[in-house]
Image (cartoon, rainbow, N blue to C red; front, top):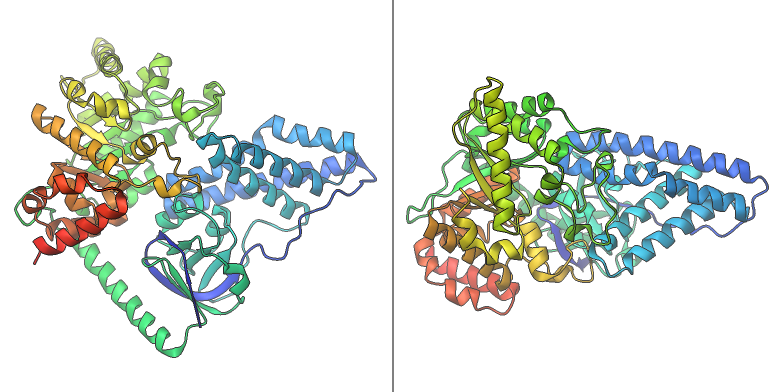
Length: 574
């Protein structure tokens, strides 16, 4: 038996036989080709095969994890569909007269290195995408596919130096019981996908490959960030008992999701669901949530050749509002740019897209696109309570322009004889340092705030969550992030503006009582986290915790915050 320690990537426990991925394949060497034209044909065929596989994986990911999971595979497709990417390799084949394996390997490796060394967080995050595509091309050239072959009828734990989302999605979710990775970050695409699918994962396990024995039994404890290889009988018995306890806990949390959330001192908190596509929308159990706190609309615009029409959008927004059954729905307007690109929109190539044309900036830059979306949203607002939220707001003029666009779209509909409500609430997604610093001014003009902790944490900490070198800095519990949330909550209370959180930090049950103590009245998250968060809120005392806020905000780092918060929660729940 051997215990290996790493970091928590995705919580939960699981066990299965170890399947070692990607071991033993040597890097190709530059080898002369007899027929460059034949090599060009081989590379084109390999690219076509990979593209078809990625499209199949996208559909599989969508069925298992919704639009967010599927988006990962759209990025791979975009690389292969870029004519310059393939043409550059074909030109090298003709010029250098080398075999396709070496050219594909060297081209993708060089691009990945350039991006990783660029100093730009976005580009560094894309390096893994090019490594993934390069590996897929090599497998296709060898006559293999990108599907991970798993032993029939066995539960599997995947282990590797690093894993791609394709490795994860290609195994039946019911059989994939855990992931253990030697490299990787807690915010890599693979780990995000594992969390979406509810698969326990441990990352950063030094020396993993040296100790792995394929076919051995592995216990994965995502909560503790550890894996146990070939456990002894006593350890296996304890772990099996822990698995049964976890299953019972999940059942209790599912029941908990159907009960209202309020702290022990009577402070109500609305717990809502994040969604953004018809598939996950239809899977939502509305009895378990207080509405939809974030309906992402960009997935209507991605993975297609043209923008969706007003009627297409209206049908989706109406379905969301109707399915909510009278509960509130917050629709975020188009948020492309950054890591979400729609090729048909012709957005400019930017050195740092996360600081470029994205969010409301795109909408104001493309008024007809914005107008079409707002018309569809306004028409859907007749079917139930609905709010409009603008992403990436950094100034009051941006909010004012967005509000005028809503009013103009409403006036246009009325002029056509289409009934629309007299007024629809318009709010701001607070996800930039500028919107935090201006929150008192924005509160005078916005109808509500929803804090997007994913980007807010990234911008405040100047730490790209996809960059393993700075991943430890990306922590929503860091005092700098907490102070930002507290400032927005204070401004909201002073102006009578509701404040919610819709980023991943809303789903952290350890932090949920802290958000309530700050005065955050709405939390929106992945549906699977609702029961856990509601239970944590009901067990806490917001008023008692409120007196501890100054001390928590004075902590040195996120680790100290979590430790002191845990101690304080234990004290006030005795």
